[in-house]
Length: 264
Image 1 (cartoon, rainbow, N blue to C red):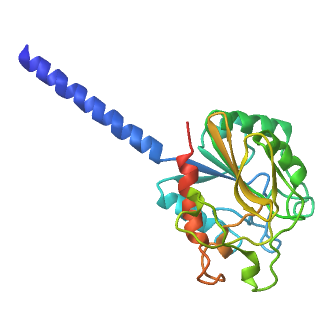
Image 2: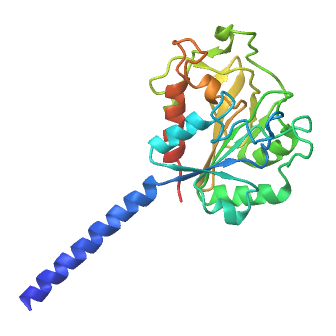
Image 3: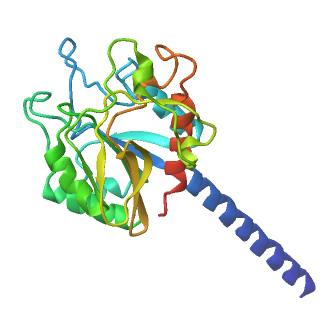
């Protein structure tokens, strides 16, 4: 009988250790879905999808951000229409620069069924990151219909205008004490729309009374917003930016922050 108890104890201990390991692996392997439905531009020369995509390795792409997510233990994927069945397969949903009629012959606007599905998914613990753009490069009307229940709305303006290589005009240096800016003293944001806040939405970065980056809790979930695609390949490293800018470190911080906010 004594041996049976010993073996049972060992068996239960192994089950417990296996459960702990499985739990750790599950939480580490977050799935990050990048929209290619509302942002669906194609290259005029090649006819191939491009602009803010994981697969776009040119300056216009997000391939380097995708590499950061993978280095942090997440997997990345590209999704089209955000139905409930699609959203339940991902932990983080990134929407970037929804198309205007001038960017697409038949833009896929954010419609009521999309809003309903996304809101329900966030409320259950999903993380939504919206990186919009400035006027007139982003479709704000339908995007703001999605954002309003999260306490945010993008203004149809252009702040931080930059001419040529006058990069300092796009610099932000008065950075707050927030995990996004841990170890960061200077970032570059070129031509950005600001954000109106309501409800429990809060500013992350403000300048001259204008909110440039914001966040909000919604149910068990989290929403991050900035009025610019911001950390695409052209401006994440120092291909063009002077060494004083720390967009790469900010991108790493943002990646860790978004992964930490998943509550599913």
